[in-house]
Length: 72
Image 1 (cartoon, rainbow, N blue to C red):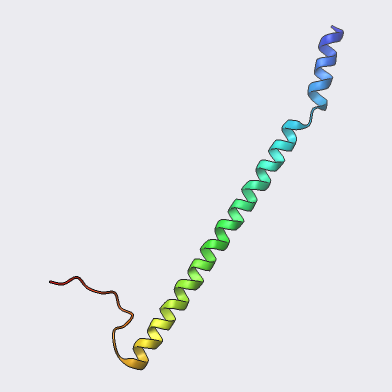
Image 2 (tube, rainbow, N blue to C red; image 1 turned 135 degrees about the vertical axis):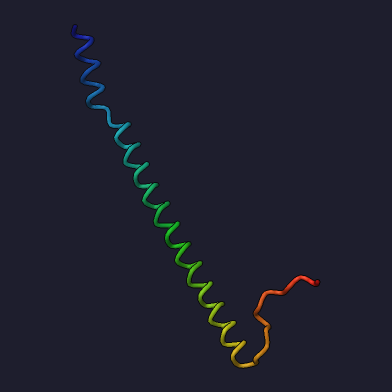
């Protein structure tokens, strides 16, 4: 019986599992934040290039920024 009580106390006092859960949550938060930052930067870059192409088309009147069409 004493051995069972000792094993129960050791299991209760062991914190390795709790630390692993905390690290997993931290990694998940960092990953989610990184994905959101990358999406935000991608949206900003896309908007910048779209604005630049619109300005070039408005100034020159040419289709330098329009996608190339396949030959017919």
